Image 1 (cartoon, rainbow, N blue to C red):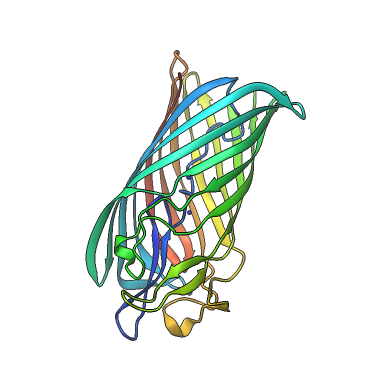
Image 2 (cartoon, rainbow, N blue to C red):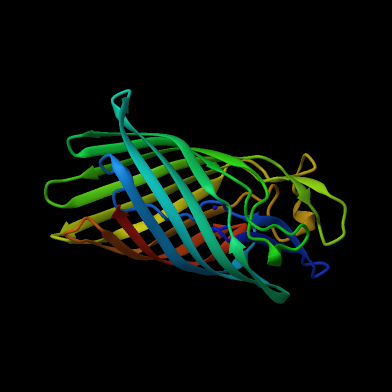
Length: 308
């Protein structure tokens, strides 16, 4: 399901002119979405997951300082369908999924504006999962489609990122007999170019290549009968430069460091409840810190997992 969440537009304020220049569109995966049982795929069957939440934050520059008049508030709901097949490949069960996000976004870049609509859809045509004693793990490939609304030169009206991306991932969970759990999901996002980028409405088109990113969701928790409590969060580090028409983006154009490499760490409390019928509920809050070249804020989540 990386602005930050389905609707996060990583917009940047051009301090000299007071106009907006943006890496328009959003992070296509909402960091921190996976925590409890991240590496534990369910038995063969069909499953519905629902992610509902809110993100709020303000833009921070390459030094980690807050940028004035640049803030974001996003409400999102994502529908996810998973199918786990009985077919075995390399000793693991085969699975596929699709994620469809709906986003309401309100952004301030000098002036306020808002937009609501479909975000970028994620599909996974291939995933395998294994189980061995207390250890469980998943390997898969996600493909993110540029289905979200995109308005070139106007980040306040853009939900989608306007590029394709592929993301190999590996998730692992350790579950002890005493109820302890440690889970992590490791992802590497590789993006295509946005060939519709404009510095402003009516400006010429340019190629904007957003840098690749390593990001990790994590959880450490303890179960008490049907309930679980723990700490969950995420870490993201951009590994390659953002490029504009083939050149690393310059700090002369806005409040970022050379290449505009983003970085963020977030952590917060998480509570889970497993009902006797097999439905699982998760509530969590994640606070961001140590942010560079991104929005910094918080995410509040409610997550539902149920078989059907």
